[in-house]
Amino acid sequence: MSRPMSQRISSFSDLFALSWGFAAQRTLATATRTGIIRHLAEGSDTPEGTAASLGLDAFAVGKVVRALHALGVAEVDGASYRLNPNLRPLFRPGDQDVAAFLAHSDMLNDFWGETLEGWVRTGEHPRRVRDAEGQRKFGAAMKAIASHLAPRVAEELDLHSARRYLDVGGGIGYWATVFCRAEPGLYATVLEHPEVAALGQAAVAGTGLEARIEFRGGSYTDADLGEGWDLVLLANIIHQERSEGAARLVQRAACALAPGGRLAVVDFRIDDERRRDLIGVLFAINMRGFGDTYPEPVIRDWMARAGLEPLPRVDLAPAHWLITGRRRL
Ligand SMILES: C[S@@+](CC[C@H](N)C(=O)[O-])C[C@H]1O[C@@H](n2cnc3c(N)ncnc32)[C@H](O)[C@@H]1O
Image (cartoon, rainbow, N blue to C red; front, side, top):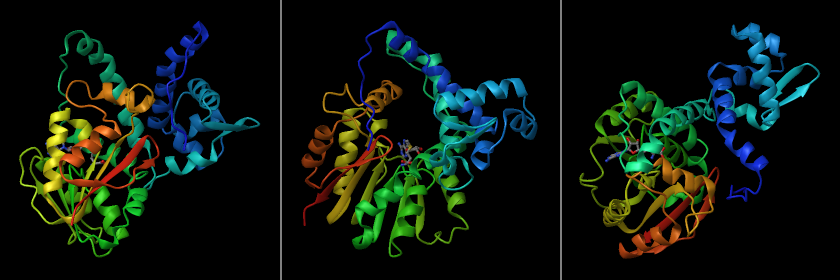
């Protein structure tokens, strides 16, 4: 699996290319939002044909489509362009669709521009407050990422022995849906903020899993996590906490396990010195002063203190890992 690592930048040309990274991200996001990418995922077309089908400006579409080619996202045949074959399923409606994730990255780009410098100067940053529409978009972005992680994690965890599973901060229940589909004997409880739990309940309605996925409104910092779980999942949760909070959550989750039960942490990978795994290092900045990205030895130490024995780590695409511990029998 490719693992983006820090690279040595040694000339003005390298710096020049690096500083144009913003333009690549914005072009991709705009091509997604305006439907250009989806159009080119569905079939081959000229820039003029693409602009006419989508009601866009032909001159601008020509520049964007050629940039998609230069970025390696689209291929060309004569005067027509088409999305690269491996990327096509990612831009068609369905479970693999990454459009919501790219829209989320675009929003993050705005947020970084507005707040990063202030935070570095003062340590202060505005808290992101999401209204109902913001929650819906965030949930859709998390689902888009999870659709590329959850099936693999379900496979790696071999869920056959699990009956009761707690998903802490489980969003709108996408992981629970994938896990329950993978193991017909599994029952999931998703602990979430009440407003997200309500969105989750609506998302699961009509899937046939309503009787097996329960949503519980509350905060994982103080809610009773219960006991006797065969599996507790912390997917993209510990990065939301500073180390004391993350350690406490691991401890409480471990205590809620049945003997032999497993605690599974899915999160961004980062090297032990926190200066090489590029996405993990950048994501740590994304979490500003309220969260962080944690190396494996740190997570293992929290697990060991909570009485869990280590199970092998699994590296996951795009930039994540699965770190699991088992409560002793
Ligand atoms: C990064 S998302 C991850 C969602 C899901 N686990 C996944 O990996 O797709 C973090 C989730 O934690 C939830 N969350 C944040 N703080 C929480 C808290 N104190 N109690 C319960 N849920 C919380 C958020 O609402 C959000 O859905």
